[in-house]
Length: 209
Ligand SMILES: N[C@@H](CCC(=O)N[C@@H](CS)C(=O)NCC(=O)O)C(=O)O
Image 1 (cartoon, rainbow, N blue to C red):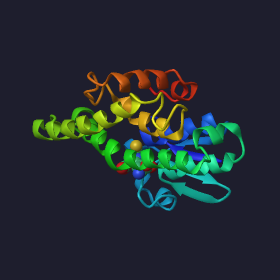
Image 2 (tube, rainbow, N blue to C red):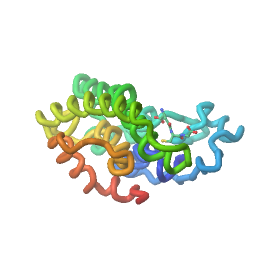
Image 3 (tube, rainbow, N blue to C red):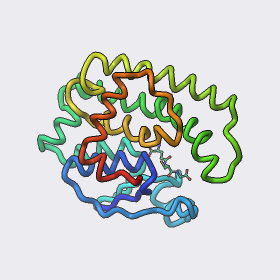
């Protein structure tokens, strides 16, 4: 099994964390995003979107981080670890799926906007943050952080009292809390949950900082 990654990719980090949680040790192949390697025809053949992560398993190439997480859980099949982080019960599983979709549609774009303005622009010499864009993405961030914070007031993890793939997925972009200046101060439940995630072996062993 191979996993095409970049150490600073939060999407790749999700896949790396879940692989590790389930006891897989894929060969990690770093795609040099900073050199544009993701746009080379050889890589585009693996993922036409030109992005990491991509999982390679038995000749099958799978892009999209959440699809990879669920493939790994299916592959781990009957193991306890797999059934815990992706429950079999229909409603419990639907709850995890709900948060994965929420992550893609709401959480990730809100964080990506602030990461671009407050972090990536500086790194890539693209000028100063645009205050109007920062304000716009902060509004989105607050909207969704409040939803997550309320949810985390009801149980220990995002989809209930047990850690699931939704926690790994939603925590991953918080690796940029400082660099992207994510305004999380007022969300006590969110901060407490994230402090717990930061202690997990899978989080710690994939930390590029
Ligand atoms: N929806 C995709 C997004 C993947 C993605 O945007 N990956 C970023 C790194 S976090 C990337 O490879 N960007 C390279 C580029 O856009 O050129 C997923 O969940 O895997």
